[in-house]
Image (cartoon, rainbow, N blue to C red; front, side, top):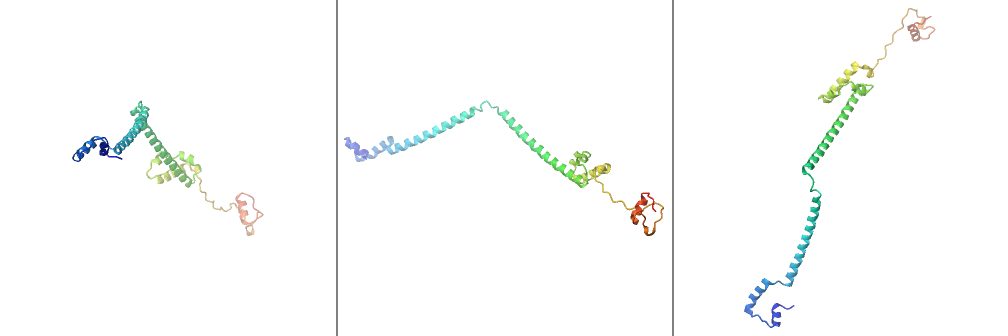
Length: 199
């Protein structure tokens, strides 16, 4: 590849040695090499591509924003606040329901421990709200069930002690050996207690 001086010489123009430095300075300040030009051209194309991508992104964003141009921001905030409150209320209600189920289960367990026959009937006689608010729940539940048991013992299984054996009554004389036609002494005593004639 010929340099500029060879090209000029072929054209009949020759630059003196003492003028070459000034010539080069003037030349390179106004003109660029092919390599520099190609580099600048490639950079321009790259920047144009970036601008095109950015413009496409802006167009897409503008299109999306168009869908929201009529949205009332305050109304949207209100809806979000309402949804948040609804979720909080549902969470509170769920926690209260779980706590209620645990409380009812504890009451039923205490009624079973007191040998209650019908938990629902006994619970209907208890001050459930008062017991729910109690700070000493276990003791208060036990006392409340005992109070219901005292006034409504038919709702509870009563432990019955076996009656002690009562000797026979009557005036008939025992036969020898304490037996009669009824058999041994126990059977005789039983018959006497029933008012049967002892021979």
